[in-house]
Amino acid sequence: MKIVYLVGGFPSLSQTFILDQITGLIDRGHEVEILAYHDPREGQAQNAVRSYGLLEKTRYLRYEGDQPLLDAGNVRQLAPCLDADVVHAHFAAKPADIALDILKKAGIPFVLTAHAYDIFIQPDAPALRAKFLAASKAITVSEYNKRYLADLLGPDLADKIEVSYLGVDLKRFPWNERAPGANVTLLFAGRLVEKKGVLDLIEAFALVCARHPLTRLRIIGDGPQREAAAQKAQTLGVGERVTFLGALTQERIAAEMQRADIFCLPAATAVNGDREGLPVVLLEAQASGLPVVSTRHTGIPEAVADGETGLLVDERDPQGLSRSISRLIEDPALRVQMGRAGRKRIEARHDLGAELDRLESVLAMAAQAIQDGSGAARMGRYYAEVMERLELRIREQGQELQRRNEQADGQARQSAQSLRDVERRLEQKLQALESRQSQDARKQDERAAALSAAEKELAAQMKALDGRQSQGTQALNERIEALQSHVKKNSGFIRSVKATWVYRLYKTIRPGSS
Image (cartoon, rainbow, N blue to C red; front, side):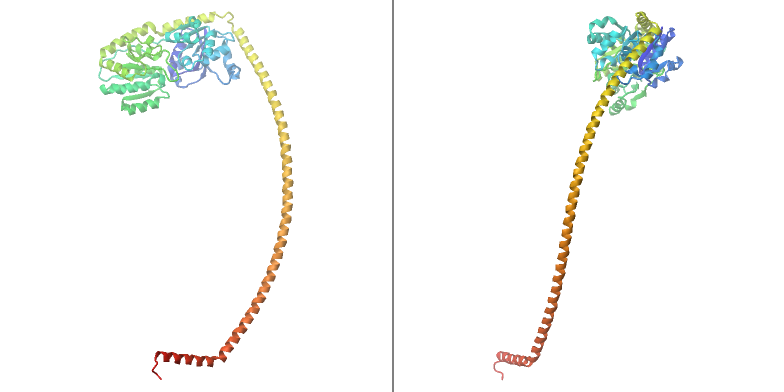
């Protein structure tokens, strides 16, 4: 079969289950093409991406605007895939949108696989139902998910949804029985987001270290909670015992699992409703012989047998988590027992080969369900659909352009009238200003004439004052001269009077003197 995989990002380190399906189907002789919306880059380091030449098989679409079908680049990218026998759309979000919008109308059968965020975060039930109805077959990864979808979308869809557990490449994750030791290593692997519970794990780890100080925690993954997780480890005094490894390839994750003693994933429902589907990393850990400590969350109890292959606690329970971890640290024999049981469970229920058998069967049935499966017919339907939408878009744009032109003409007429009104008001203001300027000029001339007359009057008054001052000075001088002359004439008389008054004063003081 020619199979097209329609995914969000490819290649991605956090979605290696898609890579496993693609390489497994290629190994079985199928031709696989990949359509994706973005390139995460990080996943290019995986060996399988290079060895299978998957980047050369990948085409990237743009999902912009309300009609991505009409994007010229998307038309070119989609065209070579229209002769596919079946399309497998992973996630009921953008991949399912384009499968519904384009591929179904072009007559290409598609299988839809729903996982977690795509159905749990603020689900649009009518839109999801339309996607599931349009799909030839629907797959989900746990019985929990199937019950949830039946409740959300209607029980009539239950028969259309098939549960297919994700598989593990048992050769890549070989079983390894650990030798008991005092130094126990805990391992976490997953994106550092709320639903993975990494903050709860660090809190539980701090409680564990109080009793088992030689224990270490290694964290694989990256994401928005990395800084908060590192800060919490420092605050709780266990920062030196926690190692953040970042995002790793499958090969390096497998190597870390070989060195670890206990695998921990305390998943929990996030505030925005996001949840786990069925974390494949739990299957990989059990395949590697690791006992698991996790939570009773969504499909996890279907993957981990509580008390047999691991220990499950309630969500957001660091105390319970620490007790379960401590129990395994203190009982090496129980760790070995659970590790062996976990490997057997994965071999029996989650072998990648068995998963590929089921998937191959579903894809084949979907491909056979379409009566007209010829590439030419599909190409014709696809381009007919494109042309129909283009013609509709052109008509709509023409009508919109005409409406805007009419609106612009009306606005232009209003603007012209407004401009004439402004010109008229401006002319009136100019006339008023000229009138005021003329009046101001006359007033200024009158003030200048009055000022000149006042200056002349002041000059005359000053001249008159100067004349009076001159006359007064002459009269004063004459009076002074007359007074001086009078004093000279009467100086003898004054001296006689003065002598008489002196003699009288003396007689008064000394009355007996002669």
